[in-house]
Length: 442
Ligand code: SAM
Ligand code: SF4
Ligand code: F3S
Image 1 (tube, rainbow, N blue to C red):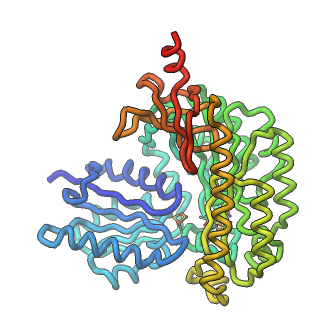
Image 2: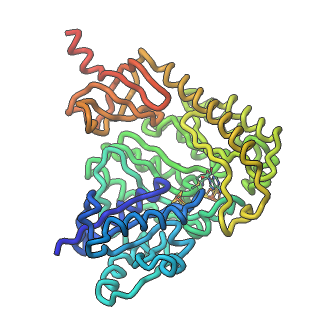
Image 3: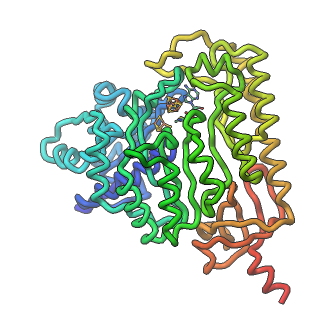
């Protein structure tokens, strides 16, 4: 019997990275990946717990799966990720269709656990925090990602305990992978054909291995000739240290978009959130970076209607957005998460929350639209990722991560090329490769 695994991923980039690494692991015990759920004999749901009814979403997905397999032999059902960690064996009790629960720090055990299940047909819950063993194990299995742009997890977990956030509970304490292990993985990705690496961590700029910091990692990865672009996410404002800021003075590969979540523009709310910095600290970092390179732009995450947010607090957020002109940001209404300090606080009226969210999003979208419009009729640098499925056009990203759809040619995939932007909308730029333009003129 051929073993086919279908993997569905919710949540952040780290979950995407994890899903790929899980597949690299299960390949060793004979699994192939399938995109067709109907032919899967193993179904893996990699879950996210950050907002809303995450838990219910999982049961809903499993319900759909059950329907798909009503008249067929059931696949092995594995739930991984942050809901698996938060809910553990409760999930199997509530939904016996689930066979294995594996938390984010136990992925190194996945092959053994699947084989154990196949052997004994006994349900398994594996949710220990063992980050060191996990990365030691995964390091021995080559990262097979060969996408032009790939993720590389360098740090996991969080010790900051912002009052709204489940991550310290689902991903465990902060752990930084050994420096050499990361460089080895980056070189391996480069050999696979990867051109852009995004370094990942829940607090990526808190990375520290002995004396090595994120800035040292960037400097070392910059030396890999095949890697042409470097990004990192997600940073915490408190860890935006001068050594990292200094790298922007000389780096040729670090992209000029910094995702630096501020969450709110109000010092009072920052304090209630336990963010441990002030808006003035954030602005100082912003100014230092802008002074080094005025082309640097910022994106952020915002939590709107956090308990206690007055009209004035909200306006402070709104004005900060107007001043910094963030691009590509995420904004959500506060969602109480079980087990966190803020879980039982009084919520702001739903109508007011929605009105505030709308106002903020409109402003954020205006910045995005204005930024994209300003690029029309100009040439920008694009890293070409692939040909689009539907049309014969190509897909790439600008330095600021904006998707670019353009007329180009196959040879350009994997290279940074110049694209003349012809038009734009809120999310995308449209244009033509300058190589093609030159040919047209010739
Ligand atoms: N470590 C990053 C930081 O400190 O900014 C954030 C990581 S978290 C995975 C991503 C984003 O989810 C946060 O920046 C926050 O805006 C959002 N988030 C987390 N908990 C939330 C909650 N309870 N309600 C709404 N948004 C939330
Ligand atoms: Fe969550 Fe980020 Fe705060 Fe950690 S620093 S608790 S990951 S929001
Ligand atoms: Fe979600 Fe866990 Fe990432 S809660 S955002 S998958 S760290």
